[in-house]
Image (cartoon, rainbow, N blue to C red; front, side):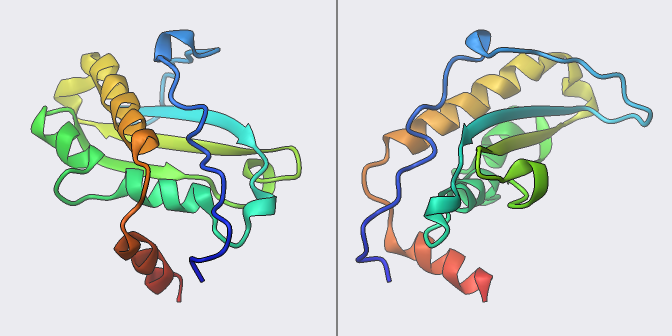
Length: 147
């Protein structure tokens, strides 16, 4: 039922410019992989178990259709895949916090352009944050996929 009191968006405090984030870690992988991971520690979302705001945002950020983050990254020759959300269990979700991650799989040719990928991520999150009313079909899509 979508007439109940709406959940607080986990995007209310996001995105901050990536320059102000608390850490940047570069990891040398064992396999040849070029990925950008951006992770935020959000307040716990356990009280929002009915409307699952991080699942909703993860669904939107990970969407692959026209107008999506992935389509923009592909158009710029930056990425091949995007994945977003939290695992909903264990260390990612607890009574203290929820960890929300966006992962972008960079094209090998775009390895040195990771800052552009970050700009796309933060721009997309700013756009999502500024939406005042979400179309009902988005809720219905998630509801259908949960069955």
